[in-house]
Amino acid sequence: MIAIIVAAAAALLVSLCGTPLFIKFLVRKQYGQFIRQDGPESHLTKRGTPTMGGVVIILATVVGWLASYLVIGRPPAASAYLVVGLMVGLGLIGFLDDFTKIRKERSLGLSPLWKIVGQGVIGITFSVLALQFKDSAGRTPASTRISFLRDTNLDLAFAGTAIGLVLFVVWANFLITAWSNAVNLTDGLDGLATGVALVVFGTYVIVGIWQTNQSCRHVAAIASNCYDVRDPRDLTIVAAAITGACVGFLWWNTNPAQIFMGDTGSLALGGALAGLSILSRTEVLAVIIGGLFVIIVISDVIQIGFFKMTGRRVFRMAPLHHHFELKGWQEVTIVTRFVLIAIILAAAGLGVFYAQWVVS
Image (cartoon, rainbow, N blue to C red; front, side):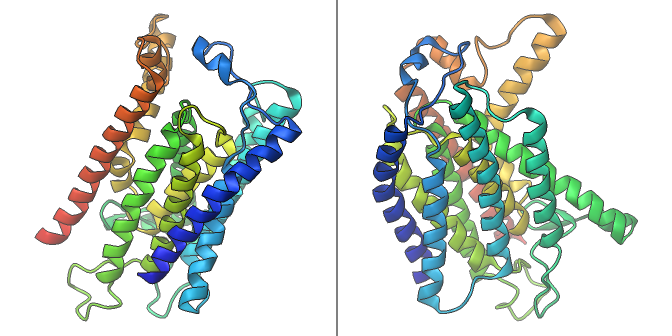
């Protein structure tokens, strides 16, 4: 438990103290945000606000993560390396995207093709490595089984080892792309994506602590309702470090934001969420825990699909938070209410998780 606290506290300290220093650097370099012209007019005042704040989130997470292992006196497990590697890798893609926007002075960054290629390379590498690194009990960080609250009987390797690997890579990359884009779409109002991420990763800290205490390594009867996760404690440490980093960053990102996380932060956080869901064997449960992100994506899909079919719009603007902006809601009101919804959904996911353990 000490390691988890250290991870969160160290990440919080680095993020809280490091963000204003990074803001000064970005202002000096004139690395500001470019605003899309078709968005709400109120956002035009945000033009020039420093972006790429995700760099601080990633740095704080890594520092907090490593600091915890200095306390416990052992190196990180494979699962932790995989999630942090996925986070840093996607953060790099986001950084290149943000830097392209700044260099070309436009609201569009990398081309969709290069973005997909970059995400694909990082995602495939993560997926393949996640099925390696067996521990003494033969567990790998990930499983080819689709998971809800734990692994289900739906095994992607049913058709053979090679085909199973391919299917798992496709499934894992779908999750990585979906979650990274979900956080990216949510990052449209001051403090919204950071606040929701804080709730979601904080929930995963609780899930990880429970899985650690009820791990099959510690429970004598494997047939009981223990959790067959390879490195639950290490995943909890990563989640705690990300939570601390988000708390510190939110101090500066709340309305009126002095810095935006940019694609650097949103892609990194989305990738970390995908990695945690895969390695903690809670892929479907994450849809409930991160339900606000899912709602944002669905609103965008509905808007685009309905417009292509009918030429009309369901919402005044998508994603959903912009719809309420155009209805006259204040930005702070939208963020507060959406974060409250995120808390309710995360609590519901946590309730489902605990209820399954109780009745099994």
